[in-house]
Amino acid sequence: MRLFRKSNDPKFLKDISQVFSFRVRTFGDTPAGVLWKSSEGQQLRFEVLFGLLVDQPPFEPVSINDFGCGYGAMFDFLLDIPSMAGMSYFGYDISREMIDTAKQHNLDRRATFSEASKVEIPADYTFVSGTFNLSLEVDHGLWSTYVKSTLNQLWNMSNKGLAFNMLDKNHPDQENGLYYAKADDYMDFCRTLSVNVTLIDNYHLDEWTIFIHR
Image (cartoon, rainbow, N blue to C red; front, side, top):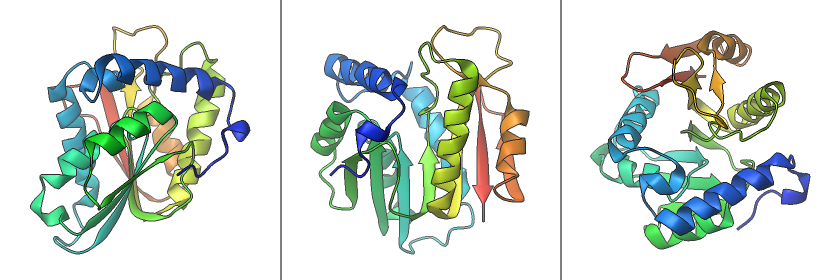
């Protein structure tokens, strides 16, 4: 299912989509297939993001939007948490090949995967893990505008909360083609969406995570 016509997308998303399609063709449903360096780092990111649900009553029905879902690794992680048995999961990605891989990788009926660049179905919570890291040669200011516009749209589709991570601008070893952001800048932006904003930057990766709650 496609929820958002790609003709309306910023032109640079096509290039980024092609990179991820190449990666998943080359490495399959593995962390390398979505540009992660290790399964340990991928797992830690999911654990940090899941802290968004700290106030969610266990075993109650809950809906999840995963924006930039890749091959559905976040759904794999959630399946291992007993209290999430009643979840409904919706994964979105701009790469058709990534979505095709996700559908083959995850056959559970609680998961739905869609080729889309925006979310148009509200959910209780939204996760965004690494989705904004790859910017290629896009101007930093243009990419920042795109990221904040997208976060605003995702927040409007999140009934209870939104969690996202970003590479840390203060990290000394930065790679070309990746977007590194200042946590303070995004904290200020997120406070325009909600007064309930939390920064998590005490875990051992070159990034930070922000929670926004209603």
